[in-house]
Length: 207
Image 1: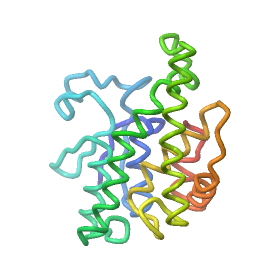
Image 2: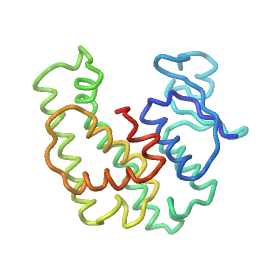
Image 3: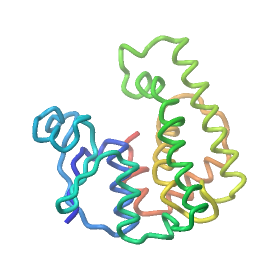
Image 4: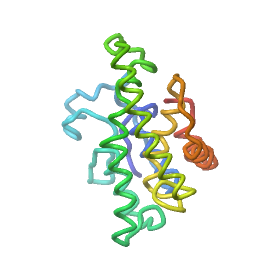
């Protein structure tokens, strides 16, 4: 049985939970992180020296980094519909997974801490405005891509890339501010909401 370490409210843990739902992978989850067992404990650091969730244990194999985990699970289980074996098709999926981590994920950082977490250290009005502008710019890039495909981020079929991107889209709509109109993103959000795994682990009230 796959073992997942991390609190269910974490957006990165939810990537793994949603991926397991899509691939019908059974798992046991343990609460680690904010509000639960601290990741600074030696027993956790022995698994992930970064003290971050999620971590998985698959038998004697331990892995951290959420995007690496979902790629591993799809490859392990031969999920070619989610993660194609053909080089160009896989590269397109990887491109959007990496874009979510390197660009989109960073763009929302200040706004999320300010508006959702209500962090006292993130209440500078100019910094918030700049953060929202940057976030909106990346979401417009996503809107253009979804308008081009007419369906999902890497093409006309749901893929592994839609898991991190879909959770990012949920965070966009769950953060309280005046959102610019992004019709393709809105339609995508509703399309994803037809999937039980997204309703359970994505559009579930947690930003």
